[in-house]
Image (cartoon, rainbow, N blue to C red; front, top):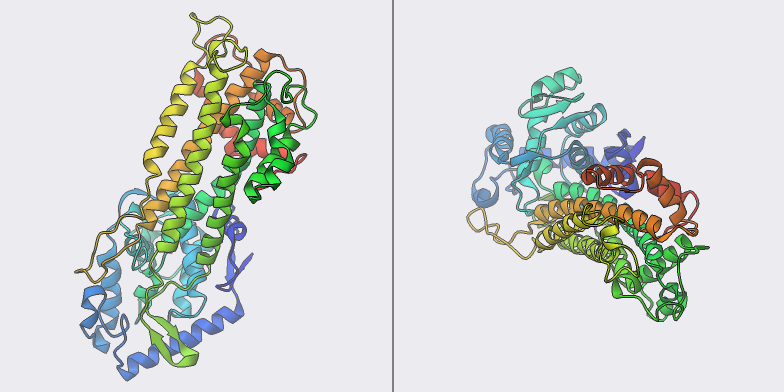
Length: 507
């Protein structure tokens, strides 16, 4: 059980709820804050004060006063009119993350929502009622309005949901899960959709994928180093320490640990004085992406615990402020940065893969890693496929956050595009994982052809995991099957778990 108080959610607890289905409960302190905030909103309504989103319309209609009798219609109309999402549905993991993050934000007690409304969302998450939320339609400012509105549709008995693996109407899903639908009261519709939870959820899933990718990148590189009889002197700690970047220091240390006791690495001057950049500069390149990861992790964990509503209710101070905490710029920039950092992991991985298959660069390996070239193409097109993914990533890595299109009659005249940035980062991560799978598969073939004289403490484990599932390529066979098997091994964390049980890999 994860206790939600609005202040202590992190990537680890996010993953436990989103990926592993752990249930949540709102803390007593958060419950009291929510109740106090709601009482303050009800006083505003009864006193007929002019407060944005409570007794006025929204966006360009912020100057239109709403009577007490129109309050319920206002909140319902807000949700149904804002449900404009299009495209494929977000994954159930992303939807669970959205619900979790919105619950956490509302639990801070600055949004004025009723406790029963918040508990409805908690019940939906705990019982597995997952609203169908289209992936496109958010500008990432005023919050993720359109996609969050689709989440709320199910709460009011509209829209569609997935429950126990089956798609059905929102009202049917709520009935089957024995959850009462709600009638939104003053401020509640706005409280539920004004926030950055969609971009933050997708971004956090991409971040967790990146955590494993960065570790796998060091493993795949270490296998390639052995396949190419790489020089380990470039990973000496003294080189890294005089520059001082943490990611670089950790990457070099990871490689030294993975390659410890290897009989296939060499020293400078033994065969060559130095290796090419794609080998020699791995601590600098992988390390920079690790530093980017840690920056993004800090941004997202801050945003997980942020009050992103508008207006914000400060009941203790008897104040309500209309501000801009819903603006997704912090997340947008971080997601663009993550996408760039991930792309570089694939870029350098594909260059190492090219060195393995190119006889002019492979230090004596047969062309395309086949012993009967001409009749067999070996790993020739594996490199093509990796190059295609790398090229696609270069397009996807163009920052979304540099764009802005004004909306709501130019009232909302600068937007973040943060949700697009998050979706791109997640797509890039999936491409990178495939490229690493290709490098790992290729490196194992190269090791076999080189003659396995004894791998390192970590690489020997990686090699064994792969070879237990995929035999050496003796003659051409359908290659996508092998690539998919490696990707499955790394997606299920089989490879990483085996190695981390024996070798420390740091990020």
